[in-house]
Structures are given as C-alpha cells and as structure tokens.
Image (cartoon, rainbow, N blue to C red; front, side, top):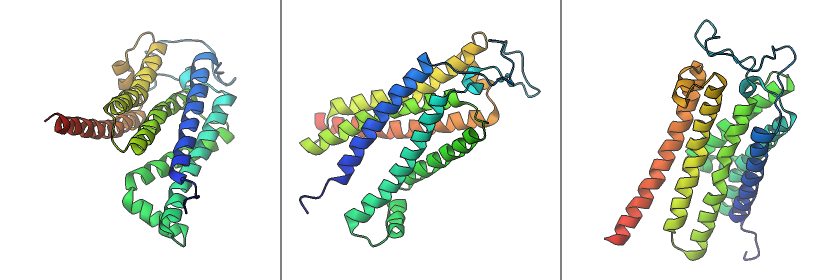
Length: 251
C-alpha cells in the first residue's frame, strides 16, 4: 500500500502544469496573435457603438473579440475540453480507488453527494466546451477571443495547489499562502472579466467596463453576472475562513 502513488497529489501537479501552459498560450493569443474576420463579414476596422441592432446591441460582425477566428485558439479550446473531461473522470476514478468501490457509478454517486458544486462545475463547463467544439467544426464559432481570455482564469490554480501542498507538508495553514491565493484568485477571476469588458468597450470608441456591460446581450449579461457572482461567493467564503482563523490566533 505504501508504494501506491498519491493520486490526488499527481492530479494536482497535472492541474498546475495544465493551468500554467494554457495561461501562457492564452496570453500569447490575446496579445501577439492575429485574429481574422471571416471573408463574408465586412472588414472595416472600427465603428461607433451607435451602429446597433434593433434591440440596441452593438453590431459585432467586425469586432475581432466576437467574430475573430484563430486556429491556435481553436486548438486551445479543444485541449481545454479534453482536460475538463479528464478531470471530471479523475474525480470519479480517484474516489473509486480510494474507497475500494467496485464500479464507477457507485463512485459517481459519492462524488455527487460529497462535492455536488465541484461536480456540477466540471460537468457544466465540459458540456459548454463540447458545444463550442461543435460550433468550431461547423465553422460557426463566435466569441473565441473572449473564451480564450476566460481560460486565463486558470492562472490562479498553481497558487491554489501550492497552498494545498505546503499545508499538507507542514500540517498547518499559511497566512501568506492564503493571501496569495485570495489575491491571485481575485485577479484571475474578477480582473479578467473587467479586462474583457474594457477591451470590448474600447472597440466602441471608449466605452468603460460598466458601459460595455450595459450594451451586452441579455444572455451575456446573465452569464457574466453568474460567473462573477459564483466566484465572488467562493472568494468571500475563503476570505471569511482566513480572517476567522487569524482572529482566533491573535485572541
């Protein structure tokens, strides 16, 4: 038994490497790669936010953030899809091995009972990326630049896994690592959304992030609000635990 590999530690190392690699590729794509507009679309570089559709939404047909295409970005989203499927499978596999269960279905039930939020996050995200792959295959993908930017949210994962590893090794929490995770998570999850909105708004002659959010389509507004909201709940819960633990230490 002592010679068996630590599956959780191995998976966290894989996750950290994956997050680092995908973040580096995403930074390259967002800052140094070219995004082409399909030839059937008009190619005028910029236009005013007054060029709206009937519902008041900007015309994004020439906006590279929405209509831009990039083969490397397609490959990156495919890799992210494969990784999400692997990570979802691993949760079930590790539970089965750890508990000595006879079937994956039994392990899945336990994962769903003990970690419903994590499992739902993986399943929903993997499903969304699978749908994206179908659009890419059909040549109908949109918002690929934005999706690539969202992959930067992975960039806080190495800090999260390092925090876990140090805590496991020392047997006690580290306030410095807690603060590092809170800071990196906020930058990756909230800062990225703010940056996307600023970039989207700047295409329409200087809209700020709030103005850019207001002109989004309804489904995009809801999705953005949910993304920020769920991450905000997680960040708040972590911050509360860190503050409470340190208050107990000082009193």
